[in-house]
Structure formats: C-alpha cells, structure tokens
Amino acid sequence: MFVIIVGGGKLGANLTRILLEEGNEIAVVDADWNRYRELKEWFPESAVFGNATELRVLREAGIERADSLVAVAGADQVNLVCSELAQKKYKLSNVVARVNNPQNLEVFRRSGIVHAVSVTNLMLATIHQELGVGDVVRLMDLRKGNQEIVELFVGPRSPLAGRRFADIRFPASATILAVVSEISCEAPSPDTVLKEGDAILAVVPLGSEVELEAVVEGRQNL
Image (cartoon, rainbow, N blue to C red; front, side):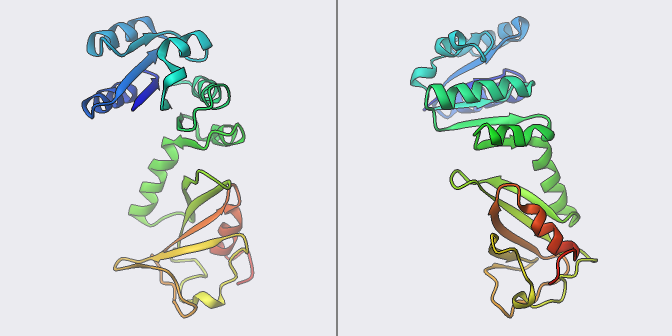
C-alpha cells in the first residue's frame, strides 16, 4: 500500500516509521525546511519537501498512484485543502484528516471529508468512558449515508435509569445498536431495564445527536 502522509511532526513521523516497518510505501510531506531535513535523515526514500496544498507538491509525492492520504499537519487549513484535493481532483477514496480544533470538525464534514478525526473529541470520549461522565459522545462517522455512531451514558441524574427500554421514546431517526454494562454488551429487548452507568450505542444522522441528548437529560417526554 502506498500512503501519503501530510505533516511530518511527531504524529506524522511515527506513522511513517510504523507503516514503513509494516512494509508499506510512504511519502511524508512537510513544508518546514528544518523538519524536512530531519525527515530526510530518518526516511531518506520517503521525505518530500513542500506545501501539500499545492498540486505540484502532491504530484511530486505521488498522489496519482497513492492508495491513501493521511493529513496530520498542525494547521487545519492544510489538512482540509489537501484532503479535498485528494478526494475531489484525484478521486482518492481513502482519505483521513486530523482536525486540530474540534470547532472545525463540521467544516471538514461539510466539505465531504468522511474520515475527519478530532483528537480532542477522541480524548473526551475516552475520559467519558472511564469516568462515566457526559451525555452523548460521538465515536465515529460511517463511510456512507451521512451517519455517525454515538454513545449515550446513563448518569446518576438521567431519567433513563430504571426505565424499561420499551417505555423510552428515542428519536425515530436513531437506530439503537446495543446496551453496554459492566458485565455485558447486548442488543436491547423491550424489557431491558437501563441502569446507572450503562452506555447505549446508537447510529444517528450526522449532527442529530442533540435529539438524543434531550432524551438523556429529560428534556423530551419519555
């Protein structure tokens, strides 16, 4: 597999090293001359100097034959533009972009970048899972259908605690996948009783998780 990595910082360099060790062909692109020189020393056959938002640089990196592009630069604008170019101009289907500022996540989604990853949101999801705090956590986007998988936590003040599943009015657009407790993960039945600390996995249209938040917080009639 031939992967272009945009951004040669710590994350980009680590990805390059790991993917090379796995036997992949890599081109790692960075616009900072000093960083490029380090990359050239570490990965002499893989380092490319230049701004990946420029077509010339992408072509030099080998975009026309690439299997995947991973944009992990420190600037969201760079990640957005090079991802758009890879998807729209070069018809590359496997594009992954890091979103440094979670407020920009919706911009990436509106631009059609399916695999836009917010490191901040991933960290928050991990914290929520470990500490059992928060209401709805966005776990991942699905490749097709503009859907996302979210996780709802039944907290100590949630009106869901102690209720039968059949008695809860979830949004019609939500597909409930599973209820996860400390001892099991199973598809809910109408008689499943939710307990404090349970998590509910659901598939919902992108951006509609606010409707589930209303259920968790009791702002919608159950």
